[in-house]
Image (cartoon, rainbow, N blue to C red):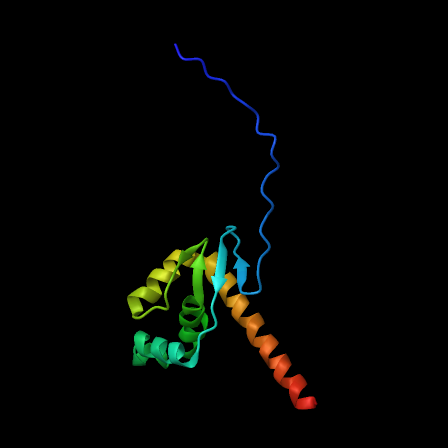
Length: 123
C-alpha cells in the first residue's frame, strides 16, 4: 500500500488584488472589468438590438448599455454584443448580481463626468 505524506503549507494566502477604477465586484464575488463605449460602439449596439428595442429607453439604459460595457468577468473576455441574442446571453451570464454591479458602475461613471463638466463650467 502507498504511503501518503501531507505537508502543511506555511505560505500566507495570496493578497487580495485591489479593484481598479474600471472594475467592480458583484455580490457573488466575481471581478467584472468594465469598458467605456465609444460613439461607434454605442451606435452599433443600437443597430444590433433592432429599431423597436433601441427606441425603448428603459431597455437600453437598464439592460443593453450595462451588458455592452462588460469587458471581462473573472478574466474571461466578452465582446460588445452584436445582436439581441448576445445581449440576452450576457444578461444570463451576469445575472441580477452582475447586472446590478455593472449598472452601478455606469451610474457612478456618469455622475463623475457630470460633476467634472459642472466644475469646468464654473471655472
